[in-house]
Image 1 (tube, protein in one colour):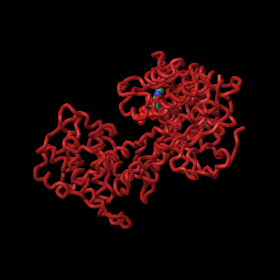
Image 2 (cartoon, helix red, strand yellow):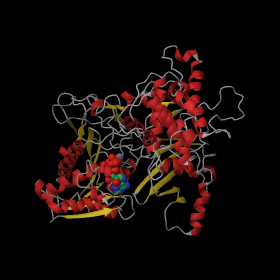
Image 3 (cartoon, rainbow, N blue to C red):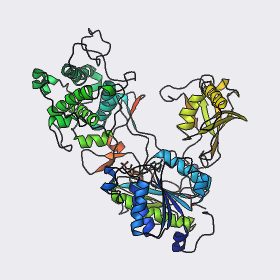
Image 4 (spheres, rainbow, N blue to C red):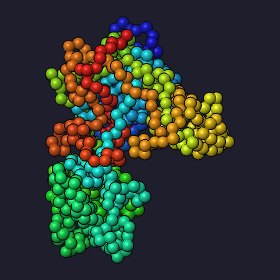
Length: 629
Ligand SMILES: Nc1ncnc2c1ncn2[C@@H]1O[C@H](COP(=O)(O)OP(=O)(O)OP(=O)(O)O)[C@@H](O)[C@H]1O
Ligand SMILES: [Zn+2]
């Protein structure tokens, strides 16, 4: 529909348009309002979620009474109150559902994304390419935001540029030489919390050996049979904050150019707890979620606790997990919405921070760092929604010479708040919008088909229901509607190594992988390789052939070609609230150190793969100009 003759005026274009909006959250609410006020009169809205109290501060179409109801339906009803004559169809559903297939997408002139995750964005991108419907994509992270335009054959697609990989830290920084609060947070949630309350069989870099080596236990974190909870909690405290630090101090080399940490023992921080054996208090209310703060009468999450308060919170949270949530122990994974977990991690991170001379933080701040939370800014969403509509109108008018990707900047240089740049051309090596084959280095004699499907086809290529062909032999298909014997056959193939499949995969074999729902098909050329670097290539496979284009166009619409530095121009998801300056944001890499003078081979991950914003590589000022044809 988009390729039909371009309407003469914006009004005409808007009036005639049928648009699909995906996501009715922070951006979506603003967008639906702006669309309606701009004269759009045929709008479909998809959102899978229901309204939560935490949405109400910025998703202004929703009220307290709507909590628990469908975002899509409530957003529609709210708009119809002031634009009763327009048509809005709401779908309370996942955009990945089969009903939203290519034919569904084909009915629209343009698709507008207000999503918050990579998975759904990639899916919509593929359907838009298949249906040949232009996509206006968007994202915000705090004060940063961006709107990009993707029109098949004219501009790059959403996936033409590989997305940034999650930030990670060298393990030694986390286990031995933290220098920033976030290192302490990662230690507290990925190591200590995981060790005490998570899956015991997982690898963990905490020192588990006891002081005198005389203990019969191989793991000091195990509870002694004759130990009560207070004794157990205090012993763990002394082990991780006292003994382990003393062990670390023995390695003089480590501290030559670093500040030496101080061991912290419970007898020093809470002498009275040792005397009383901590057992005098039980203020917890069985009807409420257990909370150490509540038990201890600490009410203000924005307050920075003293070392003694942190120690009390830690011991109390520890006990509450064992007393009130014992059944979950062994299966817990840190969750930023789990109050007791946040309390435990805040307190543990603060005690460790104290040891290493790092400033302590409030629970509110620690939660932001631990959950990688960047507080949403309603104004950014409103600006971005306005820009989406501006681009949508250009798309509807087929005014491709004026398409712009616009970046909303946090620290505008040269008085530039918005940076418009011309879109890039399609990346000729993009496996999604071009037909360039990918290359997979893999040991075909030991790698099972299942591993290739899980680690490469589903995880890296983002296919939902893949089908795998080797020449004309179908070796795997996913989804409902398979005959029983077919399904059994595919299940057998999954467990076979590549070289032993019915059509053997060897050096030089070409795989064809397809996802019918996404109408995506791509080829993978196989290169047999026997050896992989366990640390650098942990999958035991390497996928390549899809790289960022070397030449990219970026031109800030006239005079401002080199106005913004690359760091300020990039709206990325890797920003976190700077805990030392409430209300200020910094890029994660400023806040976090990634390079340390130690073995960086293994690393702990903190940032979830959930990118709200895409990234532009390189300094705009240096990127060569290349106009869209
Ligand atoms: N696969 C999907 N299908 C449909 N809607 C989706 C899908 N994935 C995400 N969404 C919707 O996209 C919207 C994104 O909005 P936003 O980023 O404001 O998130 P939120 O969940 O409302 O807020 P927050 O995450 O900050 O609590 C959400 O309403 C979410 O339900
Ligand atoms: Zn592409």
